Length: 256
Image (tube, rainbow, N blue to C red; front, side, top):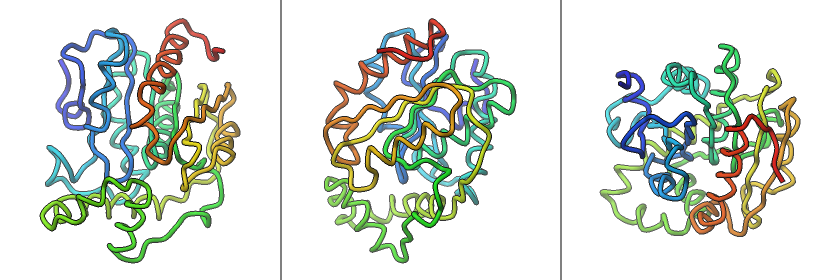
Protein backbone atom coordinates (compact mmCIF):
# COMPACT_ATOMS: atom_id res chain seq x y z
CA UNK A 1 0.00 0.00 0.00
CA UNK A 2 1.31 3.44 -0.93
CA UNK A 3 2.02 5.93 1.84
CA UNK A 4 0.24 9.28 2.12
CA UNK A 5 3.41 11.12 1.07
CA UNK A 6 3.84 8.90 -1.96
CA UNK A 7 0.18 9.34 -2.93
CA UNK A 8 0.53 13.09 -2.60
CA UNK A 9 3.59 13.38 -4.81
CA UNK A 10 3.22 10.59 -7.36
CA UNK A 11 0.58 9.65 -9.90
CA UNK A 12 0.73 6.09 -11.18
CA UNK A 13 -0.52 5.16 -14.63
CA UNK A 14 -0.80 1.44 -13.82
CA UNK A 15 -3.57 -0.20 -11.80
CA UNK A 16 -1.08 -2.25 -9.80
CA UNK A 17 2.34 -1.51 -8.35
CA UNK A 18 4.00 -4.90 -8.70
CA UNK A 19 6.57 -3.91 -11.31
CA UNK A 20 10.16 -4.13 -10.11
CA UNK A 21 11.17 -1.21 -12.36
CA UNK A 22 9.64 2.21 -11.78
CA UNK A 23 9.90 4.91 -14.43
CA UNK A 24 9.44 8.20 -12.57
CA UNK A 25 8.74 11.15 -14.89
CA UNK A 26 9.30 14.82 -14.03
CA UNK A 27 7.19 17.40 -15.92
CA UNK A 28 8.50 20.58 -17.51
CA UNK A 29 7.97 24.08 -16.06
CA UNK A 30 4.24 24.60 -15.62
CA UNK A 31 3.70 20.96 -16.55
CA UNK A 32 1.36 18.38 -15.10
CA UNK A 33 1.43 14.61 -14.69
CA UNK A 34 -0.93 14.18 -17.64
CA UNK A 35 1.97 14.92 -19.97
CA UNK A 36 3.03 11.29 -19.41
CA UNK A 37 -0.35 9.56 -19.23
CA UNK A 38 0.00 7.77 -22.60
CA UNK A 39 3.41 6.32 -21.82
CA UNK A 40 2.06 3.32 -19.94
CA UNK A 41 0.41 2.02 -23.13
CA UNK A 42 3.69 2.24 -25.05
CA UNK A 43 5.88 0.51 -22.45
CA UNK A 44 5.86 -3.08 -21.12
CA UNK A 45 3.25 -3.96 -18.52
CA UNK A 46 5.94 -4.81 -15.95
CA UNK A 47 7.13 -1.19 -15.93
CA UNK A 48 5.33 1.08 -13.47
CA UNK A 49 5.02 4.47 -15.15
CA UNK A 50 4.66 7.28 -12.62
CA UNK A 51 4.75 11.07 -12.79
CA UNK A 52 5.60 13.61 -10.11
CA UNK A 53 2.83 15.93 -8.90
CA UNK A 54 4.37 19.34 -8.38
CA UNK A 55 2.60 21.60 -5.85
CA UNK A 56 0.19 24.28 -7.04
CA UNK A 57 -1.62 22.34 -9.78
CA UNK A 58 -3.94 19.39 -10.42
CA UNK A 59 -4.98 17.76 -7.13
CA UNK A 60 -2.43 19.94 -5.33
CA UNK A 61 -3.77 23.27 -6.58
CA UNK A 62 -3.90 24.76 -3.07
CA UNK A 63 -0.49 23.49 -1.94
CA UNK A 64 2.21 26.18 -1.64
CA UNK A 65 4.95 26.40 -4.23
CA UNK A 66 8.41 25.36 -2.99
CA UNK A 67 10.88 28.14 -2.13
CA UNK A 68 13.60 26.64 -4.32
CA UNK A 69 14.32 23.84 -6.77
CA UNK A 70 16.54 22.10 -4.24
CA UNK A 71 13.69 22.18 -1.69
CA UNK A 72 11.42 20.60 -4.28
CA UNK A 73 14.01 17.86 -4.85
CA UNK A 74 14.25 17.24 -1.09
CA UNK A 75 10.51 16.60 -0.87
CA UNK A 76 10.40 14.36 -3.93
CA UNK A 77 13.36 12.28 -2.73
CA UNK A 78 11.52 11.75 0.55
CA UNK A 79 8.40 10.68 -1.33
CA UNK A 80 10.45 8.16 -3.32
CA UNK A 81 12.12 6.68 -0.25
CA UNK A 82 9.90 3.60 -0.06
CA UNK A 83 10.29 2.94 -3.77
CA UNK A 84 14.09 2.70 -3.64
CA UNK A 85 13.78 -1.02 -2.96
CA UNK A 86 12.88 -1.21 -6.64
CA UNK A 87 14.86 -0.18 -9.73
CA UNK A 88 14.18 3.51 -10.30
CA UNK A 89 14.71 5.17 -13.67
CA UNK A 90 14.19 8.94 -13.62
CA UNK A 91 13.10 10.89 -16.71
CA UNK A 92 12.94 14.67 -16.68
CA UNK A 93 12.10 17.09 -19.48
CA UNK A 94 13.13 20.78 -19.42
CA UNK A 95 12.94 21.96 -15.78
CA UNK A 96 12.14 18.37 -14.90
CA UNK A 97 15.64 17.39 -16.01
CA UNK A 98 17.19 19.53 -13.28
CA UNK A 99 14.71 18.32 -10.67
CA UNK A 100 15.32 14.68 -11.62
CA UNK A 101 19.07 15.25 -11.40
CA UNK A 102 18.85 16.79 -7.93
CA UNK A 103 16.60 13.94 -6.80
CA UNK A 104 19.11 11.43 -8.20
CA UNK A 105 21.85 13.06 -6.12
CA UNK A 106 19.77 12.80 -2.97
CA UNK A 107 18.94 9.15 -3.57
CA UNK A 108 22.64 8.49 -4.15
CA UNK A 109 23.51 10.23 -0.88
CA UNK A 110 21.11 7.80 0.79
CA UNK A 111 23.03 4.90 -0.75
CA UNK A 112 20.38 4.12 -3.37
CA UNK A 113 21.20 5.84 -6.67
CA UNK A 114 18.72 5.40 -9.51
CA UNK A 115 19.41 2.74 -12.09
CA UNK A 116 19.53 5.45 -14.77
CA UNK A 117 18.85 9.16 -15.26
CA UNK A 118 17.22 10.33 -18.50
CA UNK A 119 17.34 14.07 -19.21
CA UNK A 120 15.64 15.92 -22.03
CA UNK A 121 15.89 19.43 -23.40
CA UNK A 122 17.83 20.97 -20.50
CA UNK A 123 21.39 22.23 -20.20
CA UNK A 124 23.67 20.47 -17.70
CA UNK A 125 23.41 21.95 -14.20
CA UNK A 126 27.15 22.51 -13.83
CA UNK A 127 27.31 25.07 -16.64
CA UNK A 128 27.53 28.77 -15.67
CA UNK A 129 24.29 30.12 -14.24
CA UNK A 130 24.76 33.27 -16.32
CA UNK A 131 23.49 31.38 -19.35
CA UNK A 132 20.02 31.25 -17.79
CA UNK A 133 17.35 33.58 -19.16
CA UNK A 134 15.47 36.02 -16.96
CA UNK A 135 11.77 36.75 -17.34
CA UNK A 136 10.58 40.04 -15.96
CA UNK A 137 6.84 39.96 -16.54
CA UNK A 138 3.99 37.52 -17.10
CA UNK A 139 3.94 38.61 -20.74
CA UNK A 140 7.62 37.66 -21.06
CA UNK A 141 6.89 34.24 -19.59
CA UNK A 142 3.90 33.69 -21.88
CA UNK A 143 5.87 34.77 -24.94
CA UNK A 144 8.63 32.32 -24.06
CA UNK A 145 6.21 29.46 -23.38
CA UNK A 146 4.43 30.03 -26.70
CA UNK A 147 7.76 30.19 -28.56
CA UNK A 148 8.47 26.66 -27.35
CA UNK A 149 4.94 25.29 -27.83
CA UNK A 150 2.73 27.24 -30.23
CA UNK A 151 -0.23 25.11 -29.21
CA UNK A 152 -0.19 26.66 -25.75
CA UNK A 153 -1.27 30.04 -27.13
CA UNK A 154 -4.93 29.00 -26.96
CA UNK A 155 -4.61 28.50 -23.20
CA UNK A 156 -3.22 31.99 -22.64
CA UNK A 157 -5.83 33.59 -24.89
CA UNK A 158 -8.59 32.27 -22.63
CA UNK A 159 -8.76 34.52 -19.52
CA UNK A 160 -10.04 31.77 -17.21
CA UNK A 161 -7.45 29.23 -18.33
CA UNK A 162 -4.70 31.82 -18.17
CA UNK A 163 -5.61 32.67 -14.59
CA UNK A 164 -5.62 28.99 -13.67
CA UNK A 165 -2.30 27.95 -15.18
CA UNK A 166 -0.13 31.06 -14.95
CA UNK A 167 0.68 30.90 -11.20
CA UNK A 168 2.29 27.46 -11.57
CA UNK A 169 4.19 28.47 -14.68
CA UNK A 170 5.39 31.66 -12.99
CA UNK A 171 6.52 29.73 -9.91
CA UNK A 172 8.39 27.12 -11.95
CA UNK A 173 10.15 29.77 -14.03
CA UNK A 174 11.28 31.37 -10.79
CA UNK A 175 12.69 28.04 -9.62
CA UNK A 176 14.79 27.70 -12.76
CA UNK A 177 15.92 31.34 -12.66
CA UNK A 178 17.15 31.01 -9.09
CA UNK A 179 18.66 27.52 -9.39
CA UNK A 180 22.43 27.89 -8.96
CA UNK A 181 23.53 24.43 -10.07
CA UNK A 182 27.30 24.26 -9.90
CA UNK A 183 29.72 21.46 -8.94
CA UNK A 184 28.14 18.34 -7.51
CA UNK A 185 29.36 14.77 -6.81
CA UNK A 186 29.53 12.50 -9.83
CA UNK A 187 26.44 10.35 -10.35
CA UNK A 188 26.98 6.61 -10.07
CA UNK A 189 24.53 5.70 -12.81
CA UNK A 190 24.33 6.05 -16.59
CA UNK A 191 22.81 9.21 -18.05
CA UNK A 192 20.79 9.18 -21.25
CA UNK A 193 20.22 12.51 -22.96
CA UNK A 194 17.48 13.44 -25.42
CA UNK A 195 17.17 16.53 -27.59
CA UNK A 196 14.98 17.86 -30.37
CA UNK A 197 17.14 18.73 -33.36
CA UNK A 198 15.29 22.04 -33.85
CA UNK A 199 14.95 22.98 -30.18
CA UNK A 200 15.55 26.76 -29.89
CA UNK A 201 16.16 26.37 -26.16
CA UNK A 202 18.86 23.73 -26.13
CA UNK A 203 21.25 22.41 -28.78
CA UNK A 204 22.33 18.77 -28.95
CA UNK A 205 25.91 19.92 -28.40
CA UNK A 206 24.95 21.59 -25.12
CA UNK A 207 23.19 18.40 -24.05
CA UNK A 208 26.46 16.49 -24.42
CA UNK A 209 27.72 18.30 -21.32
CA UNK A 210 25.71 15.87 -19.19
CA UNK A 211 28.46 13.33 -19.88
CA UNK A 212 30.71 15.27 -17.49
CA UNK A 213 28.63 14.60 -14.37
CA UNK A 214 28.52 10.80 -14.35
CA UNK A 215 31.26 8.26 -13.79
CA UNK A 216 29.15 5.77 -15.76
CA UNK A 217 28.20 5.89 -19.42
CA UNK A 218 26.46 8.69 -21.33
CA UNK A 219 24.50 8.52 -24.57
CA UNK A 220 22.65 11.22 -26.50
CA UNK A 221 19.72 10.63 -28.83
CA UNK A 222 18.60 13.48 -31.11
CA UNK A 223 15.06 13.26 -32.46
CA UNK A 224 13.22 15.37 -35.04
CA UNK A 225 11.27 18.33 -33.70
CA UNK A 226 11.53 21.30 -31.40
CA UNK A 227 11.52 21.67 -27.64
CA UNK A 228 8.45 19.47 -27.21
CA UNK A 229 9.60 16.83 -29.67
CA UNK A 230 8.47 14.15 -27.20
CA UNK A 231 4.86 14.77 -28.22
CA UNK A 232 5.33 14.26 -31.94
CA UNK A 233 8.07 11.64 -31.56
CA UNK A 234 6.51 9.53 -28.82
CA UNK A 235 6.38 6.50 -31.13
CA UNK A 236 10.17 6.72 -31.48
CA UNK A 237 11.02 7.85 -27.96
CA UNK A 238 9.20 5.11 -26.07
CA UNK A 239 10.89 2.15 -27.84
CA UNK A 240 14.21 3.82 -27.07
CA UNK A 241 13.26 4.17 -23.42
CA UNK A 242 12.23 0.53 -23.44
CA UNK A 243 15.80 -0.38 -24.38
CA UNK A 244 17.07 1.59 -21.40
CA UNK A 245 14.58 -0.10 -19.09
CA UNK A 246 15.60 -3.50 -20.44
CA UNK A 247 19.27 -2.66 -19.94
CA UNK A 248 18.87 -1.73 -16.27
CA UNK A 249 16.72 -4.81 -15.70
CA UNK A 250 19.69 -6.93 -16.62
CA UNK A 251 22.21 -4.64 -14.91
CA UNK A 252 23.79 -3.42 -18.13
CA UNK A 253 24.72 0.23 -18.40
CA UNK A 254 24.82 0.62 -22.16
CA UNK A 255 23.19 -0.74 -25.29
CA UNK A 256 23.71 -0.30 -28.99
